[in-house]
Structures are given as C-alpha cells and as structure tokens.
Image 1 (cartoon, rainbow, N blue to C red):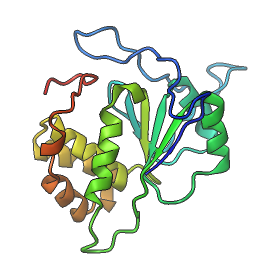
Image 2 (image 1 turned 60 degrees about the vertical axis):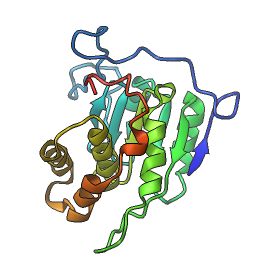
Image 3 (image 1 turned 90 degrees about the vertical axis):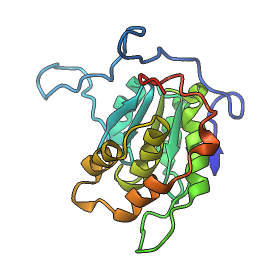
Image 4 (image 1 turned 45 degrees about the vertical axis):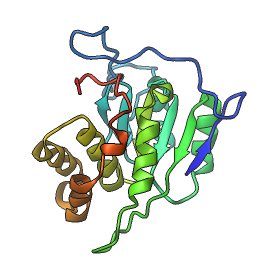
Length: 208
C-alpha cells in the first residue's frame, strides 16, 4: 500500500468537514447539484467523475478523476482518496491533493483480470480498514472506470453491512453493466469478513 499525505504533517488529516447522515440522524449534506450550461452564467459548472455515486455517509465512489473533475471533488471537502490502480498517480492529481490537504491511500490491484487470476484479499482487507476509519472521511474510492476493483471493495463493505448477496450483486452489476465479472462476484461472496466485524461502521446510515 502507498500512503501519501499532503498536509503540514505526514498522515495528518485536514480539518473535519460537515458529516453526511441519513434518516433520522443529523441533517444530511448532499453532494452538490450539477447544473446544465446556461443555468448559472459566470459560475463554475461542476463535473463529477465517471460512474460517480454516493456509497454511504461520507463515502463516495467513481472512476479515475481528471482535471475537469477537480472543482466537483473540491466541493465534496474530501479528506482522503483510496486509489485501487497500480499505476503512479498523475502529477496533476497529486498537485490537486496537495493543494487541498487530501490524503492518498494507494492499493495497487491489477485491473486486467484473466480467468482464474486471484484478487488480492489482503489488499482489499487493508483498503477496508482505511474505508471504515471515519478519520479518513469524507473519502472517495476509485479505480480506472469505477466498475470492477471499486465494485469489489464496495461489495465487501456491503457484506460487512449485512446486505443480502442478491442486493450486493445487483449494485455491482449496476456499475459494471455488460462488463460484470463472475470472478469479482465470487470473490465478494467468499471474502472472509470475520476479521473485520469488530471494526465499527459508525458513519453508516444502516444499522449493523
């Protein structure tokens, strides 16, 4: 795992942003609304990354963000990003993180999965520990397209949240679409969550 911190101290988070909650909890702070051209003359239009969605309170998912998405990401007041790609993080993205005090956790997973190639369970486990730590929130999870690697991590989170498998797979397939992989879904199904059950999911709108 590669961890980078872009603050005055190594691995020191930025000031807490307003939390996002659902239901009968504290009032929710939703992601900003993206407006169409011409709706707000003279104001910056916000462009979410590919496959962007909210996973839970303070947790988001997407494909790999580029410079066109920086304004949108800034509006989320992110504290951390989990990147699941092997490749070095682009310089422009690193500069954006540095300028905004966002911490990068990079867990390199090969995106080209041939049949019978194992997904690294320990890597997913370590990424989940970062995800579950509210000190890292608000947090964005991304890979290249926000489909397979991101889908596996989110699917394992749903297992911890005690979602039934049919709902977990439905969410995975909604993002992966025609490129859904049986190997990913089997990995999610067989992933051993026993060693993570002691970790709280205090940020969640769901009761475990």
